[in-house]
Length: 202
Image (cartoon, rainbow, N blue to C red):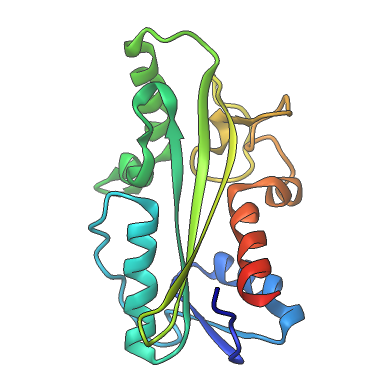
């Protein structure tokens, strides 16, 4: 497993919140974190059908374009009774002509579950795959997940995306009802980042 030994890491995202979260995580290691916007990078087209495939596209494109090691992630929710949909199309289910509508996406997921005839609990998991790529083409892959179930109706105004219908195992509230610091401690992204830190920064 290759260790990160540089002083600057490019994070292949235009999301300021995600960039700040990663910078905080890596601050103890003395790593300077910069984002795709700072380097004027465009988003590559995500053409793969797996989280790792799409994360690799983003990480390698950024590393090649800048000559810096690059970190990317791809994440989404998989629902057992829907054949693990929406999966890599999690955000696509929310797309409208005027932007993303996750209430619509959650309603679509619930309607699809009712159509299957499968009874509750509707098992599901949030997945996050991190890829750390170097300019020479090498990469390290760190998958994370948190298991739970889909609940209805939507509950809570915290979080984002499908959080109001996802209740993690061992809890009686949804991610949408959970304090964000508690969610960040147990989330799929936290699981993947713990593996990244242990593998490439530890």
